[in-house]
Image 1 (tube, protein in one colour):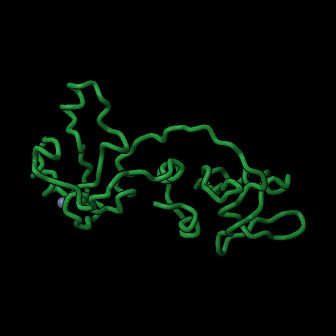
Image 2 (cartoon, helix red, strand yellow):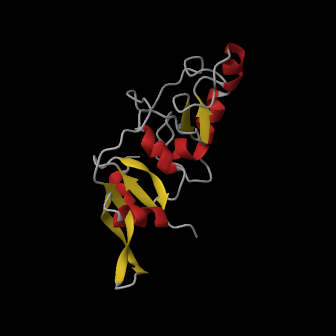
Image 3 (cartoon, protein in one colour):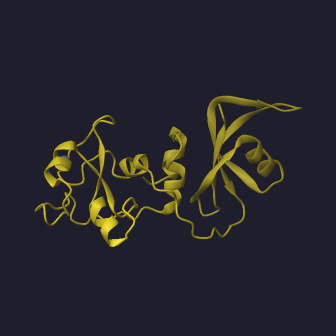
Length: 174
Ligand SMILES: [Zn+2]
C-alpha cells in the first residue's frame, strides 16, 4: 500500500498528497512540521522510533498556480454528500447517480463541456428519471438548496480522488 501524507500550505490549506519518503525529506530538511500522526504507526530511524506523519505543514507559504482538478463522478457525489440536489434525499453509494444540469445532448449541440464541476450534481434515480434529459427549468424542477452553487476550493477536489484518512478531515472542507 502506498503511504500518503497530506501536505498543507503554511495557511493550513491542503496542497496535495505526497508519498511518505517525500514527507520525511521535507521534515528532516526543516521545511515542514508534523501536524498529525497516524495512530499506532511508527517509523524506525537510526536512533529511535518516530510516530508516522499523516499531515504535515510547510513552514513557508508556497504559491500554487490555479489548476483545474479533473472532474470525477465520485468527486461530485462526495461534494454533494451523497444527497440528491433536487429532492434532498440521502442516497446510498450504490444508488447515487450524477445528473447533468444542462443535459449532455444540449451541451453537445452547443459545444459546451457537459461533465464539469458546475454542471453536475448528485441526483437520486427518481429525480433523474423525472428530469429525463431535460434542462432543469423545462422539467419544472429546482434545486433542493436554492443557494446551491458548487464552489468548494479546488484543492479539496485534488484530495478527493484518494481515500480520506480520519485525521485529514478537519483540514479538508468537503
Ligand atoms: Zn431526488
